[in-house]
Length: 581
Ligand code: DGT
Ligand code: CA
Ligand code: CA
Ligand code: ZN
Image (cartoon, rainbow, N blue to C red):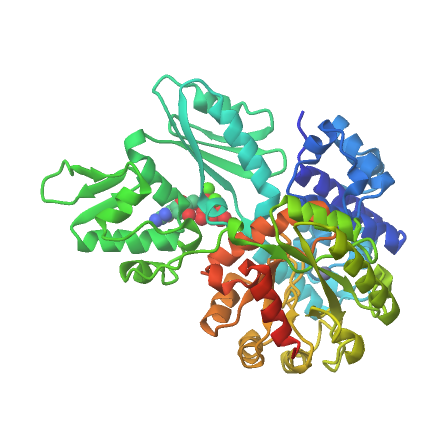
């Protein structure tokens, strides 16, 4: 049995949840919580790393104890620690914790005082007005609970794309081995590189006698078969992700790819365009919609052919949201989107000097192995003492170390930076005299997430006005599926960045992807360059760059719009300018 990262992450999350209800040591809870995030965004399968005899404790946030649990999970499919905890609680209890208004204290109260063990029971109790009387609840919270149960039912469950993609790729590989199968391709929101996905959509071309559907519904990670037909089947994998597989004819593959890649809004727009040309587009092809009933086939083999029938060039999947791409394509104004290969360096990372896992040299060598020209080392500043933030003295020492490394390391340049905390009033957490010695200064909001929009925005604008401010890290502070962004007027921030001549980070961590695609477009329209960083806490995290690039592409960014596509010399000049040098 193959155990994927997402399953291991889910186990760690559940352990953290249950420990939380138990009132266990917060540090222990946080360690599991962080491990879940790390594993989820790893970009490589832990089972592969183990098979290759790699040391899991090299992964940021994974110590010997967590590494042993990962080994246990990969070998047995479970964790004894989790089993023990589960035996102490009813099974529906973790669903309660996932409601936005319910922390472990409240879940414990619901469980102990009202014997509520599931969302269903909670909904019933809230309807009957029983919940409001519990200590620390009240009528307003009861109402909010009902609303969040409802909205949860509305939106359905979504998954991080990064967490789901390994499943999609494994399944594609599996299907490709089935005799008679010619092509297997991923479509849907996965292909459009959305941050989160509702399910996995796969298309296959196979000869008539192929067993592909039978093999699909017997995939060994399948938990449930929802539909089993000749051309369409759906299964649910053990982790809860649904996969839709459709078998299409070769002459329809392009049309089916367009249709099932979506988005729905994009499809509707191109169908309308086809109608205007006396054509009909569906998942089988493009047909001439004449008077006669037999509707002759016009095209459908490739996506390019399909778009050509409606006088459009190929539109990259990341842009297919009916957000102006069709108009742009019509005018020949589609952007040439940035690619992973265009990226020449990574300007935000941490080392073992603070809460990272590797030395500066290891980070530099790993970056060089990925073909980069440069990196910047950007530790946290002193205010984040909890994660080893640097004060002036330690930062100066690190700068000397970087000088020594730069003198010996060939083929990669290490820039001196800092991820400095933006203080409540917009000041920076280190003195100007030391900041001025660096090559770049990244400002981050790590506190006071609850400021009003006005106050938060003023805070960020003040920070940007600092003479040594290069870029704003993870500008909205959101964590996908976990934490809403803080209130911030990003359009003012972007306008200000344009005037100030500084940059915005697009943080590539699969949980952050912070900037959104809309903000990327806004930045581009104001001429503010975006820097795609990984914020790596270890060498393996450098691989997150691909997710940042995916997001940038969804945000219409080309090579010129992205700061870290510049060669070293021009990059240095661009950075120096923000530092008043
Ligand atoms: P997801 O799964 O929620 O992340 O998003 P998608 O875009 O993958 O949506 P999904 O899986 O429901 O359907 C895959 C694609 O199939 C979708 O992007 C467009 C196409 N599609 C599905 N239903 C319809 C429909 O009712 N009309 C049209 N025009 N296209 C549809
Ligand atoms: Ca989908
Ligand atoms: Ca689907
Ligand atoms: Zn960072």
